[in-house]
Image (cartoon, rainbow, N blue to C red; front, side, top):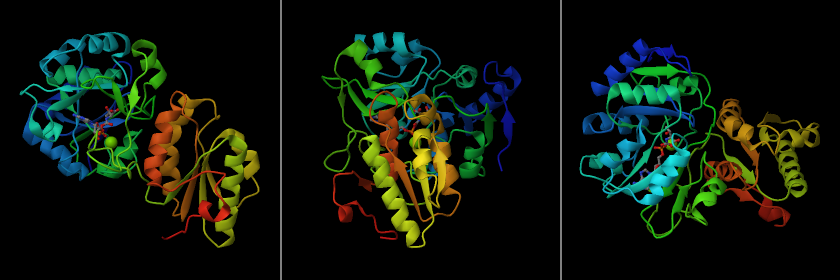
Length: 359
Ligand code: TXA
Ligand code: MG
């Protein structure tokens, strides 16, 4: 198992950072905290090191990685040109949970971009991530530090559980403050396009850019963002996402849970504090993500809640939706993918609302 080394989130010990940076420079793998989720880092300009990331995660080579930099100025060394809009967004939102997709320079290895002519770049806000990138003296390629298609890690223990025997070092700065991955913004199109809603809300981008496009559906045609599969971020237990206005949504969750527990299934609910009372008499396990309007808390707790319920050997998880405002959109995106299309919405009749366990 890889050593887990505690590190102060605000002022990381320079000796420990130097040790981690030496591993990166030697072509090794270091798992480290960012403000979004833990990343699995390697030297982003060293193809052999990057290959180890794909191997450790079991990630297909068609799924490109994000390069992490420690100064906005480093962007111009990785991309062919920096449009004014990128400069403006970087000025406002970097360091932070915003990733740009731009045409790449040849210095960026093809393995990083899965052969695409574009590269994804972000400057994270976590002091440990920034210190590591600076000490390594190279952009760090880092996907979320989980096995491919599984739930992303928000603690060092999650990383240990998934990849403990496949990384050289895990830096532990406690739970990550945002809890969902960065927002990915494609700046190569006429209209800036969100490829993955994430830690920077769409509204914040639109306050600067005006309306942005969102293209996250990947069911048909060429994929806008190759790694974003419809089934992703998934627990092992099947999950159903319930949409709709709160009263109907709660009623539908109750009905589903009651039906399946009556059949002898053990059910887990992923809910808000406001839902608790209505579900209290049901013989189910629950993970409460937070108050329904406190989307920061809900996002921070999302993956933890999924992992908690997933560890209990249940037959089905039922999750509620948190709307599409602010971080709600990122939460919905992750739950949709975790559900792999098993979405129910009140208004459909009872049969359509069903989900056959084991199907
Ligand atoms: O918050 C985050 O972004 C975290 C932390 C560690 O920084 N990283 C992360 O990386 O979520 P990952 O590998 O799990 O997701 C990166 C996704 C890819 O799956 C792909 O969809 C998209 O970024 N991506 C990367 N390069 C791209 C490109 N050139 N064009 C379009 N999409 C790209
Ligand atoms: Mg990921």
